[in-house]
Image 1 (cartoon, rainbow, N blue to C red):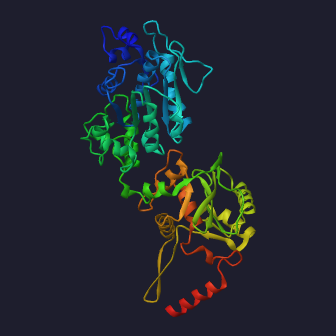
Image 2: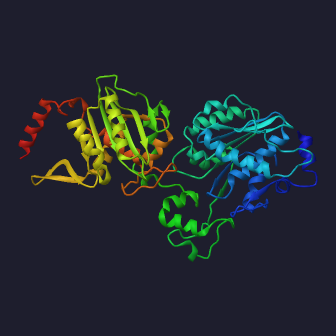
Image 3: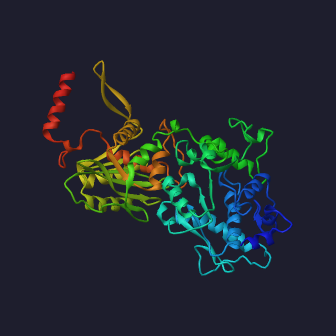
Length: 498
């Protein structure tokens, strides 16, 4: 192996070798010879092939700088020069690993030149991985949500792609260390997401943990993010960056612009639910099939079941959440996510869910277009159906000068959900899409961003409907919605207040 590298690097540097071998694609789709910029050369120079003494490396990068493709160049050469090496590529899911780093690697191989008699090829019979017939090495995807799958392998290189967006980050790193137990280099490439997680801990303690860190924001630090970009006398770090697209992102969503372009994590205070609450709650195993996720598909206990339905017709998701109120807390048991489904079809799906779970209460967001589903449900399923208008106000339970204090309905439902999470009374699916929906809601409950999936926090509001109110649910009954003795106690309290 050492002889191969020495022969390949004879009279040249590693960066020059990479430059001679690979081609890249311009912003207009033209294939050109690879001409690395200074930050790209620095990344190559700290690779394991350039110097086996180099430490593990972290790249905090702006989106669109080609970091994944450039890293795959190093991995391809590792597979070319090492015999029988299995190189794992971990991403958020196995599908995303194939569609991102593996797909880039295949493209680079298809457009690459030959190197000292070693031809880089990929076996068409293995569409999910890259194989090197000359050395017997391979590059293959690993799901980031299954860290234990890494422990089977021993390698000299491993890539964590978009690490800050992966679940179980700490477990993933631990499994990767066992994979590199005989020496090698771990490479972490990611845009930054939040301030308080494993990725930011690695960055903060990089020197003592043995990481070399490269940080490359899309725009210089001198840029004023409060002003339009074209008006400022600054240029992006790479010539292929489209300034108008960056300006649209900055004007539309400054928080996301700082995340994706300037490598600045969003402040936890700007989100309604922090990651600690979400991670503590999202731990349940579940099954999935397209738009359905479930632990149960029908009612099997005498506990109270509640349905929350955040209705949407076209752009947003229409989400149904079913929650079981157990003796130890609330448990999510079923979720149905729909997009672009007409109202009659959603009516039939609601009937199926009601028949399966026989819920004690059904809350439907009837704001705007939701009235169609609510009217049908109220006529079909009776008094247990409650229509919630998030644009209205409702009593808070407090009184001032013999008048009820009103508050926005949306605020009360959201605060109730957060209170239940803070009390550790809600157990949710361990699902990345659900976690993103819960965290995407801003602190002020104003218009939220959209997740990568395209959701507008729809699962958050469906769960808020399902888990309201915060009082003990044992007081509820199927027929009347509240036990008679409880209802009478509330009436007496009301008369006493007056």
